[in-house]
Length: 193
Image 1 (spheres, helix red, strand yellow):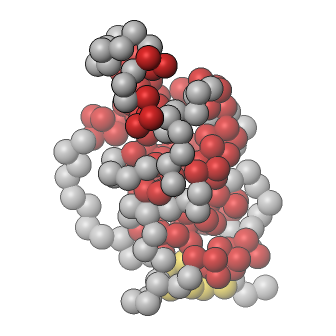
Image 2 (cartoon, one colour):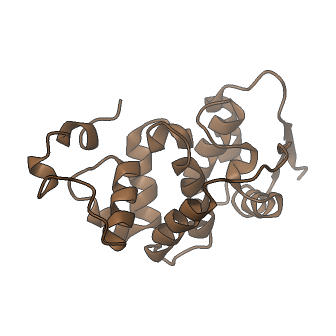
C-alpha cells in the first residue's frame, strides 16, 4: 500500500477533511482521534500550536509513524527562537507528566503538546486547536487521569494547571479562603465558549 502524502500548502485545508484523512490511516491506538484533531487544526491555522505541534521533528515523525502509519505529512517548521518561558514550560510539563496514566508513550507527547499550548493566551482547548472543551476534558482524563480527577469543580484547565503549580510551591495568590467564596469565581469556573 502506497503511503498517502499530504503537504502543507498556502491555502490551509479544512480541518474536518484532513481529520477524516488522518483517521482513515489511524492505527487504532489511544490518542489517534485527538492527535488527528490537533494536527488537522494546526495545519488549518486553528489554535496556537506551531508546526509539528511543538514537538521536535524526530518526535513528530515518530508520532505520525505510530498513530498514522500509512500517511506522511510534510511539515515545515519555523526556526527555533529562544523561549523566555522555558522554566515555566518545564514546570508545567513536569506537573502534567507526574499524572500520566503510564499506558502509552503518546502520553509523553501529549504532555509536551499541552504544555506548549499553555504558553499561548487563549483557553487551553482553543490554543490546542481542539474543537470543543469536551475534547480537552477527554484528553486530560485519558492521559493524565489523577490530574483530571483533581479538577472536580470543572475549573478552566489552564487556570487549574497553574493553580496546581502554585499549590505545589505553596504560593497563595488568591485572597479568598477558597474558590467558592472568591469574587472572581465565574472567571475561573464554568463555560469557556
